[in-house]
Length: 441
Image (cartoon, rainbow, N blue to C red):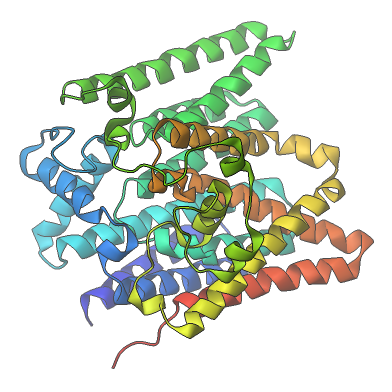
């Protein structure tokens, strides 16, 4: 058995054990394992550089830490301005694999990303199970998040997003559980994981802000005000100290501007939009271009570029996806995404105010993440700062929301219910067809 086969067997065995311990049903387990097979299949015919343009820089950062255990200079590589948590974990992982000498470093790091993506899936499943009692809703949401096109791409990318995304989603999960059940252990978990997210990537400030927002809202309640004040101050101190620490670590590595001090190499200014930013550039949407083209062009509105990145990212997919078959599937996936957004938005009234209130943390978090991404893009114009991967944690609430809407529509219109279900299943089938390849003999 080759290295990829060993990797797949070990991963499937580990996932089966975890999902069995967490008592998910056989359908959910089968969906997750099938997704892992597809992810590894995608890994087998694409290179690490095809999935993110700066993979070499992330590997350089990891190898620098693994060899010297010293943080590199901010400008020594394109990724070296990021906080160190992911790179330290990846360095420890790669050093442990080198002891056995059975996996090349690049494949080992891709396996690390695959395991971290499984963590993202597990947290998504916990959110789904906590939010719904309907098996159909849980299974549909699971299938969507597992087989979503950008899920497959991100599952094996060597990038700090691999750790940031599950941490951000886990922070939201525990914040939501704390908001629903008022258990102090949920608050402490949300606080710790939010701090870890900040230590991984600046995107973590969005979930930290969400926790601070709901901590502040609790100060308005008359009961348990003292405990709420302690929690709010604890969050303020811990998250503020974590942010200060990451800034100090970066300042010791010679940043040149205030923006670089906070955001690192994201502020290097390597890209200037071909059209000046204006309200129309951010608010307009070219429907025909979005559906008819696989990739975006620099002149496209921001919404076009962001929406397309939810499916395929912003980097070219590579030669393996350049034929007419994949182009046709990409058109269908683009149209399907717009259809799902329409069904989800039009179906929100069927969820009811009570259901929406229960999910208020996720709704607020998605809005906050969107605002942070918008501010990031305005402050540091860059084609890679219009990418959904920065807020990839928003995928789980989106899939849950769509699945819940489709389930609720059954009460009022079976036709609308089956149409929404069929659209979701088509999106899953098209995604599998787009990324699946037969093994080479």
